[in-house]
Length: 415
Ligand code: NIG
Ligand code: FE
Image (cartoon, rainbow, N blue to C red):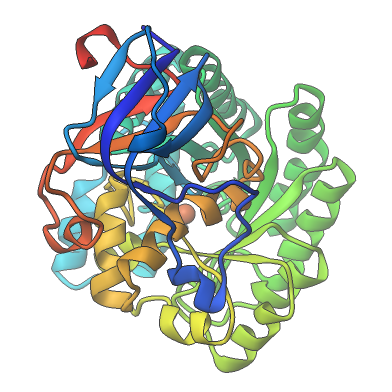
């Protein structure tokens, strides 16, 4: 592996900047800088310099010919449940036959089905399976991740998932943020005793997670049939005492009350937002909470999409993420999410690219090191095949447009 090299013969360098790129919102969400006929120098995995061809340095180290492909920052997936034991295609068929997500969940399927599967898998096997899924996402251009627990719903299993996330980070060297989602559902035995489980989260899980530094954030599924606003607030309160910042699954199926709580407690993000009214949009516009839309989940659930146009036109900035999970989004490929964002949510390709790069970096508090092409940031890059332009990516949905994914280093066979 070489981690110092020059890339030349770049037709367009996208999202490069001489100064820190801000979170893109409102009209700015459609702005992507373009540097034509350019080069980029990487030193020790860090972007050292870039410019147009006539200023190219004489370089004696390894040189990668981009063959007139475009170069952009690698994608950042700001919402995944990638660490799960197994797929759930039986429920996919149940939904085709007419059952709703909530009906499947109420009879012990859904999240609880994944909980059963996690109990019966070793930490080693869970790691191996998760590693393969992560590497598939990497091959499709994703270079950094957020990963949630939430298929454990007991101290033992939640910690198992969080330890796997930690090991994925350590062994890959990738930027991976970890989120504790113990409040994803209620275990069957606590169906009628919500407080019993919430007390476990607060008094058994959170202290160990904080002590072992196993999570950066705490997430709660604030939704009808899952966690009520009062229950959500109780867990937010406890998490903040352990210095875990908040992200919320909210407004997936109903106006579930998560948005006022997220704003009140300074949450980092509110995620899903398929059901979002004008009051909620204007409340978000006046806050610093970042909206994360998960179009792949809306696609699989056959439900409305986040009203992206209305949000952007109200001045908001959006993040798009995969929500990769075995129930509502069995697809880690952000290219698919980008296509859906454009086709179903009427986002422009530029808006979608900002949503999975610089805006996603802000949503994971990684904006100092990732998300744009700036001197001093990590060289996490995608080099396209020749003839690719940004509009082609969402349009030719399954076209294999990626020539190289470079995450700090290139391997010998790439130049
Ligand atoms: O983000 N909505 C809650 N959690 C996941 C789905 C989890 C599952 O069905 O396994 C989501 O869509
Ligand atoms: Fe999710």
